[in-house]
Amino acid sequence: MDIYSLTLGQAKEKLDRGELSSRELTEAVLARIDAVEDRVRAFLHLDPEGALARADEADRLRKEGRAGELLGIPLSLKDVLCTATMPTTCGSRMLENFVPPYDATVVRRLRDAGAVILGKVAMDEFAMGSTSENCAFQTPVNPWKDGYVAGGSSGGSAAAVAADEGFASLGSDTGGSIRQPASLCGIVGMKPTYGRVSRYGLVAFASSLDQVGPLTKDVRDCALMMNVIAGHDHRDSTSIDREVPDYTAALVDGLRGIRVGIPGEYFGDGLDPEVERTVRRGIDMLRDAGAEIVEVSLPHTEYCVAVYYLIAPAEASSNLARYDGVRYGFRDRDAQSLIDMYRSTRSRGFGDEVKRRILIGTYALSAGYYDAYYKKASRVRTLIQEDFTTAFTDCDLVVSPVCPTPSWKIGEKSDDPLALYLSDILTISANLAGIPAISVPCGFSDDGLPIGMQMQAAHFNEEILLRAAHNLEQRAGMLGRRPPLP
Image 1 (cartoon, one colour):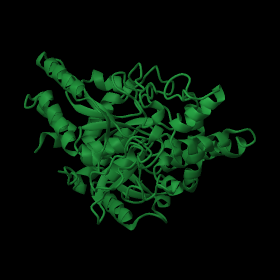
Image 2 (spheres, helix red, strand yellow):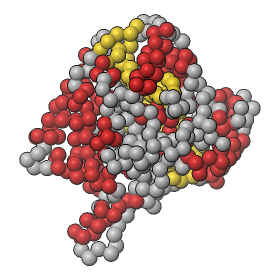
Image 3 (tube, helix red, strand yellow):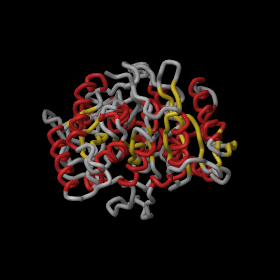
Image 4 (cartoon, one colour):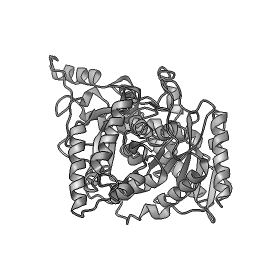
């Protein structure tokens, strides 16, 4: 087995046993990136010298008997997380040359755990999109099929992990931006409970929806990453002060006593037959593992897209007002007046999709329309949350597809933003409700494209998600399957 194709857990074991050095591990990954990056196009910023220096430091610490949960493990970061040692662009011209003065809390926790940070990976601009085509610099490509989307907005993270360009990545999820690309690229992706992982240093898109989470090669790696990044942070006012369990302890065989809810609303019109067939086969595997399968209802599902695309753009409109050309980031220095400078800076610095969402959000918050749009959407959001509360009285987790279809061709939906918005219909409810959710590979389409299963649980029940995901993974035959790259 090639070194770069190890899972994070396997690499950690070899490092701990002295069978590998972190330098050897990092050199193997950097060579892999050099070999396939022209095809995958995941990295916006790669720091090979810094990565090797950190690998050497990890080897020195290990010889001294020092420990760290991720000591010497090469990882990547979505370019929406602040890093003091490299640029944070959010995939936007607005922040093209911006280097933050501090690390995000999750980045600091990775460093403290000894991780070797390789660089920053591509994403939809300011995390607004479902394909990563909105990135101002390059579009990552699905490693499973050339010319197909890797998903979004954490498409670079998913593509990098699937292509073995690192052992894991951190992404952000506002409406499915970890789970959807994980599904399309055949890896594991988790959105934790809102408040479980610090958002300090995560560049804001929609503050009541955003959450940081891991994208990994398997479920055990996801648990290992969660052990490092989860926990209270006093710098984040929405962070929950609650004890963090050892998530790897949840990876036990068997699901006896677990009730799995199947919402009929998630298996309706518009669902690709191959996706439905594959996910239902996955449900049978959960039954074989001992789970009880029950029917549940989430009656307000039909309103999720409308609610999300009022709340998220409204919050984005407010958050992105800070990019005015005055304080930091891009500035049009040729403007002749302050108003012209504001207008020109934002027109040239933002891409079309970001401007579209700012306009939608500004309209929804404007005088005379706030009650009709944003306030009403917030009330329906409460109904969506109550749907899940009711469902979890009858089941322990809710299972569904992640995306209505497998991956599609780059450019296929670029001129139809509504079609892209609708592709989020199965994932945005978890963000609106603030509950944890995970995507786990469960099969392939006839064209060889990965298909994932989504599992959602009640607040702070990540352990039951990991347990169920582990049992599906053991039965689905997807472990160790990798894209046909050179």
